[in-house]
Image 1 (cartoon, rainbow, N blue to C red):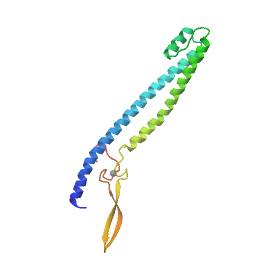
Image 2: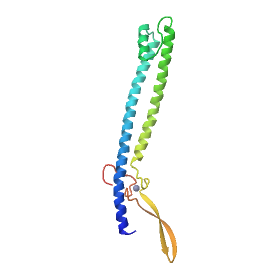
Image 3: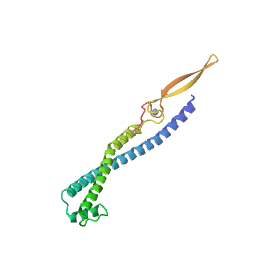
Image 4: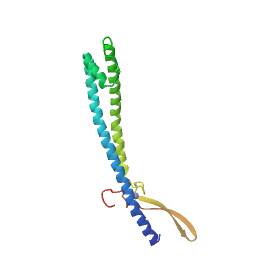
Length: 173
Ligand SMILES: [Zn+2]
């Protein structure tokens, strides 16, 4: 490898490093936003779960006709609450609440997995793209000796991460 090539390649690596860092920082921010959104979603879902559970209790333990009308309105249902449909209306409203409870529980159960996925992604965000995190690059080198050409695999320190396998986003590599 001659000097001119080596300098050119080093310059290119410095240039790449900036681009790589920017891309990684952006990905990190995206992951932080995703996590924040998920945590908000979880909080909202937990609140909804509690209010639905309370609603269910209220309906089951002797709800008045007036209150059931209000609940039907809150749930945006089209159910007639007038006698003699009161019992039937209670049944439909309960069914609706149960369905919503089921959906909310379902969404809540998915959140830990989604957070785990974000944590996994975060761990690999700053993995060096040039060496795949190994810190070294293997190159095939050709040698000519006594008229015979042979090749050897030579491992060299990764020029992008300087052998660390990861890109330090907070400082110099
Ligand atoms: Zn590397």
